[in-house]
Length: 213
Image 1 (tube, helix red, strand yellow):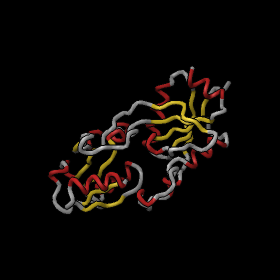
Image 2: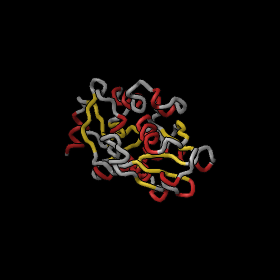
Image 3: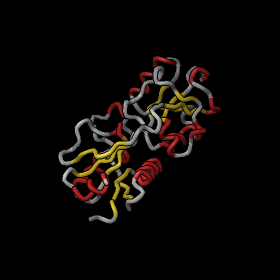
Image 4: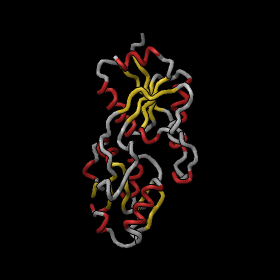
């Protein structure tokens, strides 16, 4: 029986926080965290609404799992493809830490208080369409990168505000940066936002037994 389980995650502070969250759920198990760059981490230019690959943020981690280089993949549930690669299975999914989107802005302004032509960074087509409907006078900018890189764009004055998952701010201890937390009726989100999924090889009985125990 395995003594230590290797967890594959993306190379970011948020992914590290997610791995720590998983460790706390399974306090009796030993874990080794391994960072793996995905296509989505390497390509920080292509807007997400132009990405056709459903495994943009998971492919390389899942490949490492299939190759036996890691025992568990930890993914944001909303990043999972509708159909997992053959041989893989979701064994566990957490409750959502927070299902909401939040606005981070210079001077801590709420959406209704942003001036006309304020530059707002967005990372998904869903958020872009919602903002267009709510404030068609804003300048929407496609942004990519991890949470810290996106927040830094405000400090560098390349954008004035951005919309981000509130769960990401919570996991990084940055809740105070949220100028506004949107209600779901005004700003609906992905149904699995804030959840984490543990993916294993479907035939890895040792790992499955350890996690289920």
